[in-house]
Image (cartoon, rainbow, N blue to C red; front, top):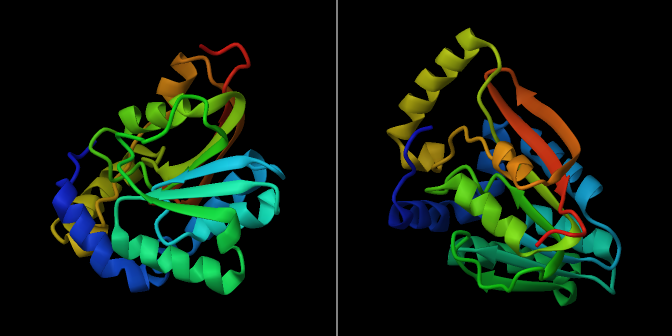
Length: 225
């Protein structure tokens, strides 16, 4: 796994990219990103849930979740970029969903929440840029209630060895331009959750063969410590 970009570089990139982030990310992923968000929300969120969307950016996933939880639910969107949160707030007000949502500036590697705070926790494409994606996903698991669902979508390596090598070359070229790569690289987080006895509920691979995304949902056991 390639080393992450520095935090201050990432924040500057996302603040600057925020107004056009949805368009930019959609084009780079051939709109597989939206499919991943919908799969995560479909399989991880229920009406009335307390939901955390960690690294939720401009709110694309959080808005889907806010519609699904209904008026009795609550969605907290946490992101380290003020620029991205500004776009999320604007979209939430335009959609008439702001009253179901809270917006927090924060670091995914230092979540400002107690253990077992949420019925569902979501991360769509926000683990990829972290310095330690495994630490990040285990932090998300910590704040999930026993019996709750964690839904994740992130970049993954191609299964085919030849495509994996080609994808590495493409990633290396993009890495020279942070505004293009946005710090995203292929990561692997599911094994750490499975080692912690998380129960796999759903798994799919989407995107194109050269740049796939893994989408998964795990349940935290009821008797989890």
